Amino acid sequence: MLPPTGVKPSAFVRRRGQSLLRHLFQLLRTNGVAVEAGVLAGVHTEGDGHELAEEHHRDVVIGAVLLVDGILEHFNVLLAQWARRRDYAVVAFFQRRRNPEQRYGSGTTYRYDAVAENQNIFVFYKLFWRTPVCFRYKGRRSSKDGRFRSKQRTELGARNMSTLVPPHGGGELKLLLAPEAERADELARAENLKKVSMSSREVSDVLMMSQGAYTPLEGFMGEADWRGVCADMKLSNGVFWPIPITLSADLELADSIGEGEEVALVDEESGRVMAVMQVEEKYVIDREFECQHVYTTTDTEHPGVQKVMEQRAVNLGGPVSVLDEGEFPAMFGDLYVRPSESRAMFAEKGWSSVAAFQTRNPMHRSHEHLAKIAVEVTDGVFIHQVLGKLKAGDIPADVRTKAIQAMIDNYFVAGTVIQAGYPIEMRYAGPREALIHALIRQNYGCSHLIVGRDHAGVGDYYGPFDAQHIFDRLPDGALITQPLKIDITFYCQKCHGMATAKTCPHGKEDQIQVSGTEQRRMLSEGEDVPMEFSRPEVIAVLREYYASLND
Ligand SMILES: [Zn+2]
Image (tube, rainbow, N blue to C red; front, top):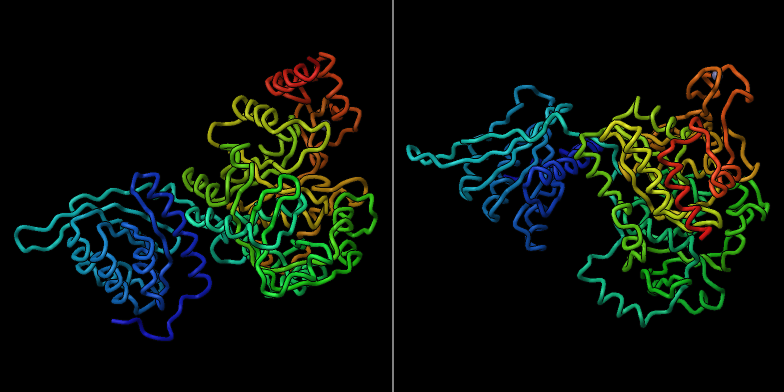
């Protein structure tokens, strides 16, 4: 029986379904159920589930059926189809609870019978809108009447079920990394394409796309998207986006590329082919227009502005397929966490609200305090490090990670913090950058971004709270991930504890602050760093590093 026509799940049901489906995946995996293929079968696409499985020669199908009133029969047909074709059928069942009579549906017999044909495990997932439950059934055909009976029902961590924010744009994560099996052939083919070299910023953007951190972008922006993003923080399809993600090429090279032609994108530093792109558009931008809108200045002393001004003559826009993740996965190992992986980690911990803390430095007590304020109001904190290029004097990533871990191990409740990193390169666009940081964190599954004083700023270009205020001016629904706005934090000798400018009435003279320069001097000269400023375990790691520099 085909579904009645004209019945479509609402955008909300779809989004909710997709987000729950991801958690279901994780839940099953952590409970030792092998899940290999996933699809969201909407009521009008009943073929998707098994076709996808067939195509990929999978043995396990996981599907979600969004049940709108009157579609129960359809669900049964669908399940029967899947179950007949596969050894295992893993089915996610979402019911919209409009009519309480339909809670359990009418198709119990169908369901069990369908599964009984396989004599295998069946996972039945019910969503009574806000309270998802996941069971694992093991059944047997009755010797009396030959019908399937559920013999064993195990609840799979329903209480731990998390519901994370959906990726930006409302759809699935857009992973632009080509399937592994295709990469070698594609790389060989790319050798014969015209090569466009990429700056470190452009390489970092390609890596962000590869893992879905820039969802829903499908490649480098064309002119309409570029203009909309600069002027109104909107892509041409209306989706919120605060900073242009563009690729540039020299005039001569751009002229030689035909529209629709594929080109290879090469890291200008390593010479590695990273991706292929189909050039759909070539356009020349007004750089001052971009800088004025995005950076609020055209001053070339600003490092972000400088990069825009150094771009090559012509922008190339079009969809990208990434073939190489570069050195990051090998260089950073477990720290290199992609959005699908962070979402899985959060789901495993049962987290729903997660606050991201952006950092590129070791964490002292002021940072610890920010993270702890976040732990108080969310399920956990995602300490998210910038893994892009380092500046002279920066602490290397391995030392920084070790120092942060020393703080986590000694001063946080176990299981409240996850440390990870991502391949972004800073643009120092202050308020606009805070917005894209929040957008990206939404893709990683974080519901909040900690936005402190002068977030992602540089010099005196932005006011200390501009990056917090800009969130107040966004249109409704622009971003689901919200800022946790926190003032500067410090140890106050009169308060005898950590405080913020919002909670401490005392003066600067009572605050114990150590500048970065002063700290470096204290560490390399073996001087004590005040306990009120930094934890001794953190200082020990940094001291060891500075000592190694002096050797
Ligand atoms: Zn005080």
